[in-house]
Image 1 (spheres, rainbow, N blue to C red):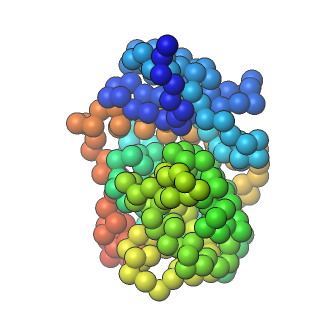
Image 2: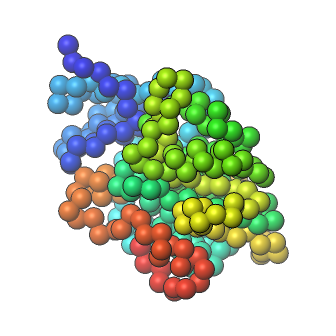
Length: 289
């Protein structure tokens, strides 16, 4: 009998398994790419091992945005420019800030290739624009999960190994929660909880009043200011969000498959915090991926 592994994603060189949404079903599905053909099913078999999609509570499953299939991403530059164009159109950020956000989005799809996951901090008084950016990021980030009222205990109640892009929106974040988020950002750190070790490694997006004044948060989070008085934005209504997700999630999954499947050809550098922070502070005008 084949051994069974519960998974939200695996990579085996040019083969891969990804968590996807089957619109005809209310349950998670796995997409197996064996290098030549795709299979979508609740369980898939690869190298004599059976892989099963995780069981998720319905409230979490409804909130989690996933691709329904995989498609060609085009070139990395084209994909980067298209994501940057979305940010500029719907959030009204400058080209420099839109480029930083677009780079962050691509990073969320390569989370396994980074030791410390990047963070994006949405800071400032313009609540409408900040929420619009969060809604857009939910359309294009990998495994985005939007939450409020988060505490360390509530965060540790999430399922392990999902590779979530956490979207936390709340006015204040306690020191204890910051400590757990910091641990969760490190790929090889597992968090003990109720006799188990949780893998909460993933990118983080924080919408809050201000970041703690520490070198750790300054080094890991790139701040995107939401200043009041921006121009009137194009409304990002639910229908538009659905359209963007349907178009970009499959392309971004294709980007992930091509980059993680052929590491020798990875020209996109998944992480460089010094460059990101320098750009956020206006020290560099470059915007290529």
